[in-house]
Image 1 (cartoon, rainbow, N blue to C red):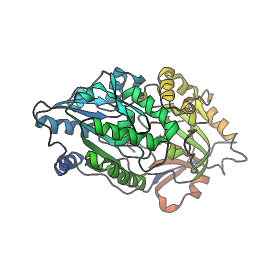
Image 2: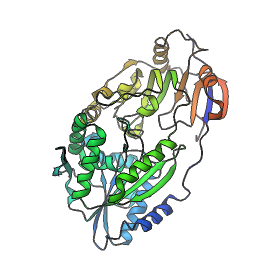
Image 3: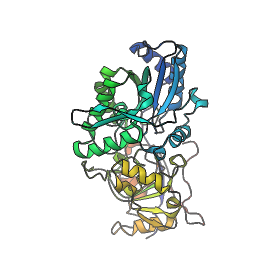
Image 4: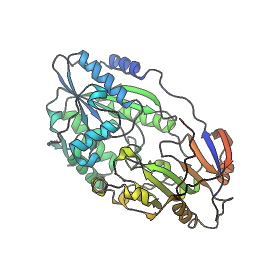
Length: 421
């Protein structure tokens, strides 16, 4: 079988980006009066996670500025469970790679990771938090509301999950994930978050929602009493904005890169249709016969969690894996499946050839193939002729091609992506 010709398409997406994110943050702070209890010499912690979120550094920097204007002493606390190797310096480095550092946001980053217990939930889940949280006068969470990669519920990834998985650092993440096996994610996350809000001086959260164009579409300041209801409402909005693959059935999906900055699972399970979680329901769509993952993002620093979701990968990627960090993350998240190494081939051409040989009686004219940069970049895609002809034309804003799938002398694909897209 030869390789198919490709079309470069842009999916049609509405522009939802906020025009002035920092101005909207100021307006929300004023509307909710979330900082009214903060005065001179108040110790305030801003909780920041490990995802690449649009405008994340800008929002945190502005929040630091607003708190400093009130005379507060402000620090940023990395709240990311087992990420960054599960230790303080590693998590500080993760934030720096996301553009969040003392130089960019104007506040020091907490490196210590001592945790203390603050009680149990009604179901008996022990709750741990970073000790610095118990010494603060105020805590503000900043996170994106979106679908979670491991489960489907009325709340998924957002402020509640940040409390349940992140505030307890490595120990808290391990404990919450362990009890999620017994009670399910939504119950475990909700109970732990409620305990955190009861025992800690949480002022509220800044919730961000991405639009389909990967820009900030909504920003809200939320008080603790409104947290659960607001997160349920914003999750529905996030689902409406989420961009998906333009087809439900594919033969081959090529993913250029996976990483923790892209998704907690390395690549978004809701995009690829594979959760691989033994205690949560599997997805029914999309159905992709073979997934080929080519590389890791630089920002993931060797953490290859999610590689187990693929069928084939390259030696190039495997050589970049930090197995200690990856294994730590997979075990802490109770997701050993996502740390497994798929069939590994020397280069892209051999990996794709193997994928083509395991999809059934398809040739270069009938194969449905889609090529993406990562699961957060779905506006511009490369698609085979058979895939292109099956896509609803109303979903396509523009198209170029056909063009040849090109490989370098090293057997690796040559990038087809347009500059700046």
